[in-house]
Image 1 (cartoon, rainbow, N blue to C red):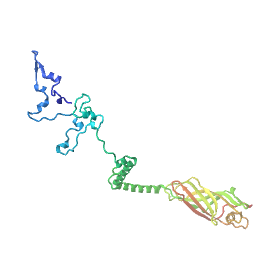
Image 2 (tube, rainbow, N blue to C red):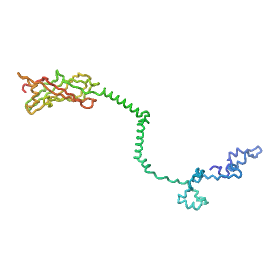
Image 3 (spheres, helix red, strand yellow):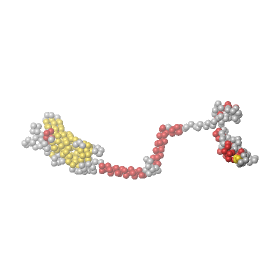
Length: 348
């Protein structure tokens, strides 16, 4: 507590007394300054007959017993100070006796050893507050925040993804430009399907060393190549095949008589790419009266004297597997009226 409010307030300390006192040459001590400084300063603030203030109580503010601002305007509630011993059962009897526990003197109705009054606990949390601090409540708050941000963005009131200028209008223009650019890029970079046609002057090559035709069991087999022309002019880039599968059918009976695989193959852009497509013919029948077997035999039989051979009539289907193209486009063409480029053995 400041010495102003203690007994003997206003008295100077040792240094001040040394500065104020002066020893004269004769050895006598001369006091300089006003002798009223040795009196309490608070007495000099009041005139004769003036009402004096009450003594300062340092505990008044802590104990809630001091004057309140609202009391100056007459709106203070009818509340009184409630000392600690009203809350502490052990201190209540001593306080009721009005005796100081340390000095045994009367304290005026309260225990001098009490501390600051314990504040009253507030109300319990409501259901809404408990919900907000739970995980589900936090998720709801985040969802509501996202919803509000989206509504603000849809009204061109804020940007998106942390970019202030990325409003809805700007985003629509950027998205439109991106889609147009993507369409142009895909149009020029996606390969197109290739159109295969039969090379009319020489459509089929056969390896004579592989020729086999028997009557019992009734079958025929041989290996060769289909000579095709590939048109890739519709594509803006070279076409690369991961594979292409050719299937040959008898045009009269539509029964499969040959298959072949092209494998990996790269084709330059153009409309007249020659392709030699490997093919393997193989067919089995019940007997020699089978129409498919008879058609092949009549077209490629040994040219005995007086024998007129028929022509070959095939349907060729090529299923394409192109790198960068979704799906498997098919190209179809037919071989009609073509003279068989080989002949079976006379013994067959």
